[in-house]
Length: 135
Image 1 (cartoon, rainbow, N blue to C red):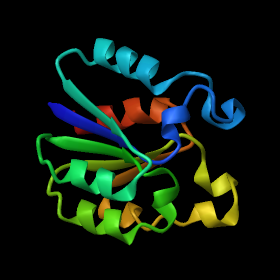
Image 2 (image 1 turned 180 degrees about the vertical axis):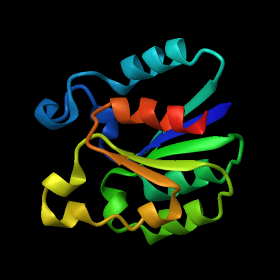
Image 3 (image 1 turned 45 degrees about the vertical axis):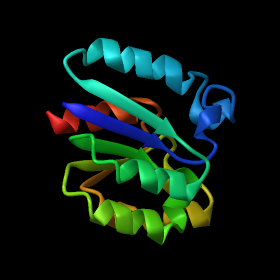
Image 4 (image 1 turned 30 degrees about the vertical axis):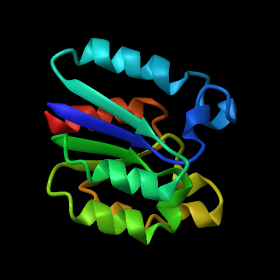
């Protein structure tokens, strides 16, 4: 399966950004682990701090399933939500932290309703759980 993993703003800092919340493993290192564990799948990884770039990547349509961590865009990007609505493939929203144990504004996801499922609070393992849901 061709799986697109797409991360939003500030997730390029995984491994160094607030390790008490997001852990100390970089996305690149974790992605290598996923590629080893799911060697029959093909992974495309994309990260941007820019909303329109995330939408452009989602619209490339070169994947069979998508895992998205929209970062802060989760809470207010109706543009990303609309884009996800138009993707007729499996879609899982992933959050490394438990968004329901954080600040009030983080408890609302406007993008979740455009996805098939949401995984929140399992750390980086959330990406693995999302991949397993596609099988």
